[in-house]
Image (cartoon, one colour):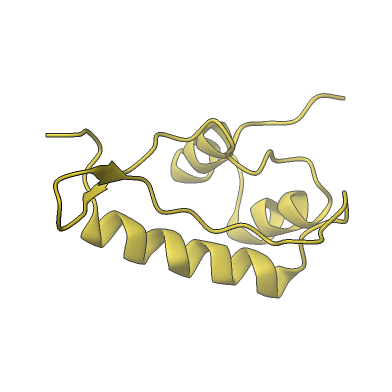
Length: 89
C-alpha cells in the first residue's frame, strides 16, 4: 500500500473522511509521508540572502516518528509559517 501525502491526509480530515484520531494513528504507522515535498518557506538574512529554515531529526536512521516528534514538528512548522514567506520576494 502506498502512502498519502501530508496534504492529501489533511484534506481528508478537512472533508470529514478521516477523524483526527485516525489521522494521528496513520502518521504513527507511517502511512502518511512526512512532507518532504512541502512548499519551502523563506526568510531574508541581514545581507539580503534568502534562506529556508527547516527542522530535521539527526540520527533517525529510518525509525518512525513518535507522537512527541510529530507534535514538535507541527508546532515548529506553525512558527516557521508565521515568520516566513512562500516565495523569495
